[in-house]
Length: 142
Ligand code: SF4
Image (cartoon, rainbow, N blue to C red):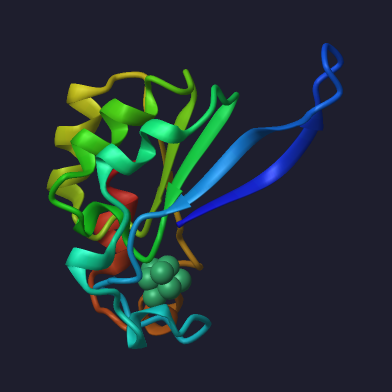
């Protein structure tokens, strides 16, 4: 599923053209946040957007990959590869739970942006996210 969240009117031909996209890769998530119910309605893997479906994206200024937890996707590198054909600026939103996967992806794509959500200091973060150790995993990535 794509969400184009900024529409810019191109001066050249007057046709509305998106400049930014947020792409929801999955509703699966290992966290159990109190402020979000996505984790209660996980998507089926086979029904999630596939890297080849992103070929139809236009040229964009910015792509945000989000979820759910994007790093739960084992093909995230293929998704990022395809996104780089459409934009130079890619940012992934994550809880940081899969810290090894975050580090591995950042090594493969050194220009990628990683946006780690932290909800407060250790106790408050883990209470809100419903998982002990979430703060430490996210914080270590900063
Ligand atoms: S980490 Fe994000 S997607 Fe997952 S349950 Fe929390 S707010 Fe929702």
